Length: 468
Image (cartoon, rainbow, N blue to C red):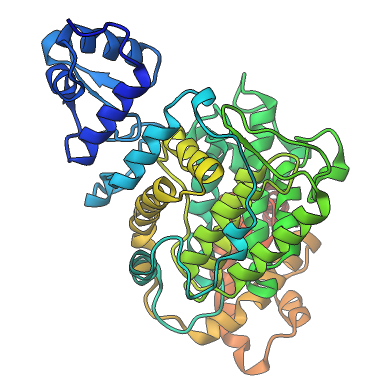
């Protein structure tokens, strides 16, 4: 008779091996046969692993099937009830290397090797020669995600900014424990743009979660405004961290600052570096190398895994890495990466694989799936963009200046246009743009001009008063 004390870790390895052979949903008999144990022993062990959350299952009695958490049939975590299209990219497939890594990470911490930060992970990377994503995957994703044509940096992002603000802020915040729904996040963003004027909405929501979401909104807007001019720099990343963590750390001196404290990673054998000067030097090196990578998708992936791996800040490293991953995509007018529909456990395993093994297998599979979903999500906007009018692009900052003068300073349209000092030959075109923008200005689209919803509401009231 088989030993009823068959190790759980060994059974997880058996399941990983079956997954690697293409078997996703595993019956008790399959697991028992591969492990060389009696079906009743396998059934007892599988039930316990499922109860402990180490594996997933569905069905009852003899029809019950099991699989590792890394291989869900379709993740419903963080799903948004909206109009997104169902495409083949909805199916997240894991490579044998990912399954093997997940099997290692499923072992108890006591059976995994203690590790610390390894500088060669960054120092040994040669931009445009080395590829974390793999050269073929990186090039394929760039081809799929790029917007055709010679456009100023950040042009595509501006077109999808309103959608991205909610998508990325909500999905990234969910990975940090946010409990506010997607629809309530939309409503919250329409009501406020700063921590100081955040209403108690939605009722009963944790104030920290409201701050978490609003900080993301401000940080994404900062990137949209700054990146086209400043590019990728240490200044940008550190200011990004400051915006994300405002009101969430006790010491304001920690905002954007290289940490001087020791940090630990929960449920991991990884211990990050704790020497401030080395942290600062390595962050600078990561940003420098990312800036020299010609493929923006590879550059985004490089930033995502390396900022999280380094842990340069006292807190907020993963959310900073997620938003930083979008910087190269913005600069090259590629589809942004929103992290919508990511499963928290899958995400954490991707990070743990990098932390403990410097193995990006899970991260590559997850990133590839997520980015293709983002391309699909924002694809409808791409199709609607059509051919750009170069005059419209030139006049964009002038139109913003006019709207700010009208809404914030109360100037009439003509004085505001004269004050903007646009090229004289484009004055007629500017008037057309300003009229359309003013007619359509609302709390839901004002952020792209640096105008708050409260300012729009106040301006509308004044205009209504003048007509009475």
